[in-house]
Image (tube, rainbow, N blue to C red):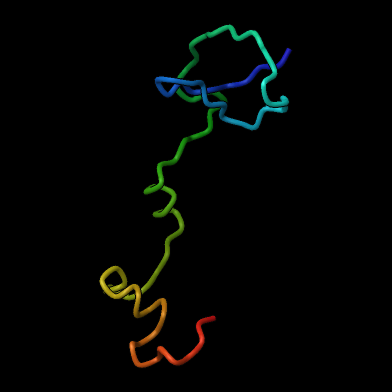
Length: 81
C-alpha cells in the first residue's frame, strides 16, 4: 500500500509528489482529510520564492527590461547570446 498526499482542485486530485504508476492503472482511494501542511514543509507562493532570491538590479528594471535584456535599440545588428 502506498500513502500519498494530494490536493483536490474541485475536479481532480493532484498528487503533491510524483506517483510511480502506469497510466490508466486502477486504484482504490480512501479520502482522509489532513492538516493543511502535512510533513511540516512551508509552502511558498511565487512571490515568496521571488523575494527569497534577493535579486538586485537597477530601480527601473521593470520599465526597461527589454533594454537590459536585449541591449540598446542601436544594437540590433549584434547577435544575441
